Amino acid sequence: MNKIILDLCGGTGAWSAPYKEAGYDVRVVTLPKDDIKTYYVIPKNVYGILAAPPCTMFSRARTTAKTPRDFEGAMEIVSACLRIIWGVQYNNRFGLKFWAMENPAGHLQRFLGKPAFKFHPYDFGDRHSKQTFIWGMFNEPKKHPIKLTEDEIIRSRNNTRKLPPIPEGYIPDGKMKPVQIRRSITPKGFALAFYKANL
Image (cartoon, rainbow, N blue to C red; front, side):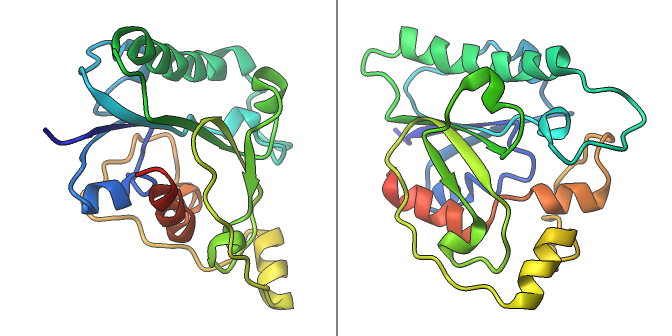
């Protein structure tokens, strides 16, 4: 039986990609195909869960948006992810091997507290910075930081870095612009390091 990995709010599936490539039964649960808030068909024998709820309302950079922050609405999705995680823990005899929830450094820590792990993409060989927080129960991936050039630092700060392409077959939810989707893709270096630490 293949080990099941749930990738909640997984978008392009970049975080769970190393698991899929290794033959795990990866199930990306994301809009518009699935509504995370009504996803209650939880399979048995789930091995691990990755969750990346939308960061729009938690972003510190949200200073010129036309609509006000909606923490309550954003937390409904976070709560839905946690309910799925808890549901597996309740019903899985051996419990999850790991679970992790990701969000860029921002206001989500006001609700979840201090993150278990913090990183920048350059900690795992990707050539840009973007502080990211991880909450959960998992083995920490081992960092192998690289030094960014001055130009790379400036481009990261100004959001003008070279972005990865949107994978073929990805169905956008209609709420995010292509550039937002590309900015939200999990860095390959981190995804691979996380996989190696949580086989």
